[in-house]
Length: 486
Image (tube, rainbow, N blue to C red; front, side, top):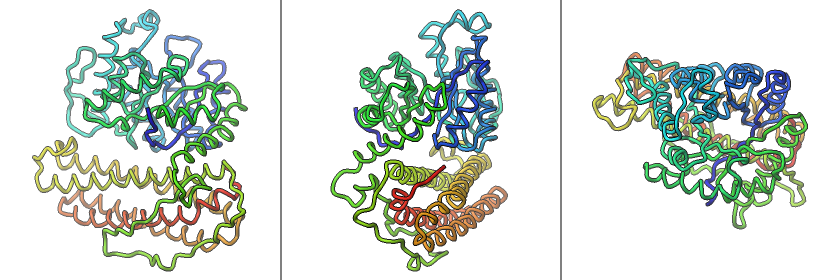
């Protein structure tokens, strides 16, 4: 087994007890402030001592700003997939894209049956889960009245919606071969717990997932590997799991504030540093930093230029005796990870625009799933995605302008001209995003305006990719040596 190269994410698995929700909420808020990415709660609806998971996650989402929330994992037999799809999509819209969906086939069948749920065999539970994934994903895609006939779940003319603000990941809690094969065929992520899938068993389980993914025409990299762990794991052990077993998300089962703080401030940065160092091989300029800024390859899609790149200021040259901290280097890695995500999302926006343009020429062509819809539905599919992406870029730039840049300026006043220029470019990119949005609205009313939308997206691509490379080139080094506080 090897490293799949995914960016690393860290989160917490909170106590679900009804008499401890104040603790759970406080821990979730601490995770949010300390820079963790994920907050989760287990889902056992038949346990009268536990609060309802979706209600709890909704309150947590309302009380936080950055973390993504998810059930770890949702008990499918007691949560009809059509309603689960609407619940997850609704919370994702409300939070601006901060929801993922962990799913489980079910366990403790007598307890489930006591609440009038089904009592399924192991084979039936996997079969039902596969049907449920199809139901959920179908209701998240624009379309007309949907009809799906399954043994366990059906849709009889149901209309899809609401549509998530981002592509919600479906992560399966799987251990047995049939569940692992389903994960490889259909899931976005695998979410086992160390107690039931210890490290020495991960390689064999991963092999089943990978083989199933390849048989389904997918890449094993399409399945993100997450892992529920306890506090006994060291940073070195987690890094080894990332590099050797492909795990890219670590969810810590926590009960107290000290555990969350240690995980966020000590363990996560150390794991990121070790993994980044191993991923960066050879005598490269970024060896001391553990990362290498993404170069600008000079490709431009539009003749329109919104700024003069030759007039960009540069920061001070690195000193030979500069001291770089693990947390600082991890922050640089996080910046590049966020930028890589924006680059991937931009590529998807471009793909969607291209599909709409192709649909305008031949509506009947079934080149992709989206192109099987009507032209208007294609536009709305693209529109929902573009709106979400534009909001993501704006949120990222706002965080930099209000938090990161002021601290870097205080740490090294020589960075002032660079930070001023980056802020100026943020304003330009914001105007380009507004232009994309306006072009999108015009296309919905007049399909012939697709050319204007393509032109706007080309300008966005040129400006954003150039900006991201410039920012990494100038800021990764000072971020590694200037203390930063969330």
